[in-house]
Image 1 (cartoon, one colour):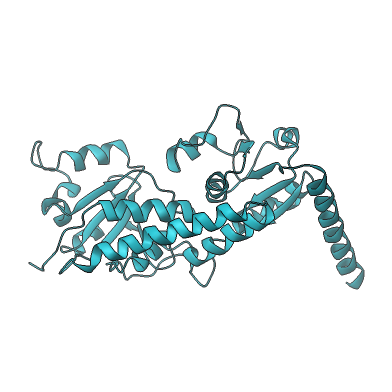
Image 2 (image 1 turned 45 degrees about the horizontal axis):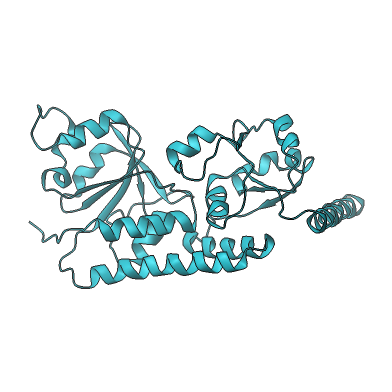
Length: 301
């Protein structure tokens, strides 16, 4: 047992020494993030990202911005193409805890560091601030990291200020539609939920959430919240978008979504994709979107 422990410690020391040696020899470092939230943060810090996993999925769920043709697609996030990864010759690979099962394989290519945005204490926004600063220190982008923290905090403060003069504001349900019958609802422990909390906006969903701060529920659950404001974050499946876009009576009302009180009362806001498992860039984007969304006053009827 002791011999195994010493061997583990020795391997860890060797990896760190090797990483420090490479870091001293090559600047800037070649950093490959397998986690999309970490990738988004790197882009925001101005760090060159030579490769991503599931590049098309990143474009759909996180956004096209920053995606250039020369960024290599590594394939699946949990099963990246190891030959392509070696060809990138990274100095550092970044993952979240959900990738821990493949960490030993990744370590054969380059030093691999784990950054956890979602943790049992359910504070993803605070964790994102910490991670941004840690990445800034690690990658010599500390000034940019502080600017990102500052601009996010300003966006959250602007959101708070926008609600100060609003009376009888609706509580909010913030969802992502899986399909016409199923939704993910974000509340306690989610990045979306933390943004609502920071903006002093009441989250209507008080039911238990999972490790990432959301509940999977039937779309019919929205009928239980007749006074709530509904925020639908993309990507929204095309059949759902068509129904919600036409919910003004321009077509036959024959779907559950047509009869949602939030839709009938004009309390629906549809937002573009904002990666729910992201970090400070996504928190900032959501705060700015909510500030611009002119959330209506909502007296109980």
